[in-house]
Length: 85
Image 1 (spheres, one colour):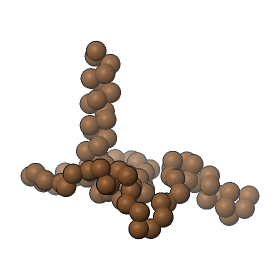
Image 2 (cartoon, helix red, strand yellow):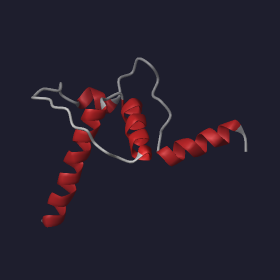
Image 3 (cartoon, helix red, strand yellow):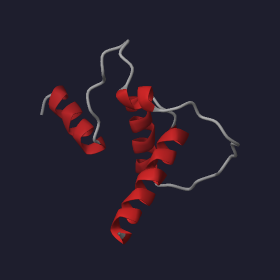
Image 4 (cartoon, one colour):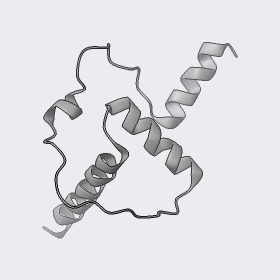
């Protein structure tokens, strides 16, 4: 297995996409309004692999991990709202 095949396997496992060219804002980042509201610190106990996925996805999309968690919560709520209808 070549180095590139190993990297491709890791990307596929982590569901990473190749990075967008520098200078072009991520479509996700461009569409999000600025973060506002009260902030608080939560100590979350999550699996190490989930923490790595969280870090990789936030880096890939150029957003904070807090914003990524917020988007995941929104998507989760929306999926359950769609099921209730």
